[in-house]
Every structure is written in C-alpha cells, then in structure tokens.
Image (cartoon, rainbow, N blue to C red; front, side):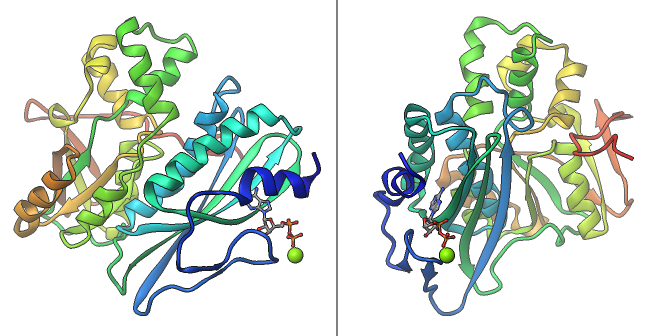
Length: 322
Ligand code: ADP
Ligand code: MG
C-alpha cells in the first residue's frame, strides 16, 4: 500500500462531514468557513511512543488518546471542538494496527462531531501529532489568567487513577484485580471534559485541563492569574481504587503530582458558584470544591485544617536537562 492509498483508505473516508468544511482531505490545504463573531481556538499535542504511552499500548487506545488530549485542551478553553489535523509517523504500514488506531480516532471524532480535515503521513519511529481547533462565541473563551482572590477551586471527576495505572504497569504498586480495568481505562481512554468546558463558560474565572498533575497545573493558573491557592487535601476526590491501593499520604501525593488525568481544574467566584453547580448538574459530571484562591502567590495545602507540605511538583519535561 502506497502513501496515497493509505491516506485515502484510512483517513479520507469518514462519517463526520461538517457544513463548515469547504475542502477536507485531498487538496494542499483544508478550507473551513467559521460563522461570524466566533473565536477559533487552536491547540497541538504530540504523543511519542515510550514517552507519552508505553510500547505495549493498544493502537485503539493510542488513537483515542491522541484525540482526547487535544480535545481536553479545547474543553479547558470552553470551546466546542470542530476540526482536527493529524501528522503521523509510522515505522511501517501495518494494516491491522492502522485499522485499530483509526477506530480510536474516529469514535471520538464522531461522538463530538469533529472532522479530520488534513494531516501528514511519514515513516520513522511512532509519533502522533494532532492539531485541534474549536469554536467559542466572540471573546467567550476561558483562560488560565482570570482567577481572583476568594474564588473557589474546583476539579471534575477523580484524580490520580491514570498515574496509579502507570505505576501498576511498571510493577511499582499492587492493585486489586477488581480495579485494574477501571484504572487502565482512565490511562488509555481519558474522557475529555468537552461538555463540561462549554457549560462552564459563563461561570468560571479561570480554567485548565490537568495533564501534568494537579499541583503543576494549578501552578499555571496561579502564575497566569498572579494569585496563590490553598488545597484542602481531605477534599481532593480519590477513587476507591486509589484509597484501596495506597496509603492516604501516597494517594494524595500521587493525585497531586501524577499526570494524565485530563480532568478540568477551574476557579469560580462566590457569586457564580450556585449557577456553575446547577449548570454542571445537567451535564452529569461530578465536580468537587478542593480549595480557594488567595493573594499569597504560593500554593499551600491543609489536612484536617492544619498546614502540610507537599514536596515535588508534577511531571515536567526536560526537568533534568542542563
Ligand atoms: P502535500 O504533499 O500537498 O502536503 P500530502 O500528499 O502530504 O499533501 O497529503 C495529501 C492530502 O492528504 C492532504 O490533504 C493532507 O492534508 C492529507 N493527509 C495526509 N496525511 C494525512 C493524515 N495522516 N491524516 C489526515 N489527512 C492526511
Ligand atoms: Mg501540497
């Protein structure tokens, strides 16, 4: 199978056909026509085998995750995802691998009505780069920079399961059989909080998706907003798998510093709290208040109402490089 045939067979034929895509795969560029008075938000994320996913990861999971991490960024901006481009580097043309990979990509695309409009296909070590675009009403996007002293800090879902799964796969922790499937699903098939992001748009002062670890990503909000925060550790939502597999201190540490959660972390003023909680109750995702923004310029943590210290921050690329 040649490159052209491969593109036609695996990528050009798809079920999502959006009206705002004038030209999709097949020309030198894709052409889209956004509606008047909308902002287009754009993000790119790369997944490299052995860095962002273990070599043993199922191709369907790789396809899913490559799309999900990008849609998670779109969600954090309060935008509705619309278009994707996919640059893929493959060691070889493996028909079965590509079939499964595409199933992972297109299942998410179809769920969110996102169209793959272009990309690039090359040979080399396995790596996937996706650029996703999304739409918001003009100036209606969320950002990291709007958190204010006194705002409440919230997080969606449970934190730490994906990091626990990684530890389990590396043989660093034992996990009861009854939890293994659940935590591996959190690692391999993260659910981007796309509907939550859009529901939050009117209520939230700052938002980010948790990819590098809760602590590190809260750090990004604090830095961008020029504020500090306190996290109430007792309130951080942990799954039964986390409670069951780790001592409380280790579970909290992993929840704060592990990555790959793809939950949303956001801040809400006292005035918008009830509106936000009502809006989210319609979406059906749980949210938990885990602390409050303050003027301190640092992140502190409390347990049983007493200050405690957390040592490391989240996963950071090139952290040991000169
Ligand atoms: P060019 O050489 O003009 O850049 P290519 O031969 O690389 O074009 O690609 C032909 C068409 O197929 C383009 O529309 C491109 O966007 C699309 N395409 C190539 N690879 C992919 C891919 N992995 N996923 C989606 N579309 C792709
Ligand atoms: Mg060209």
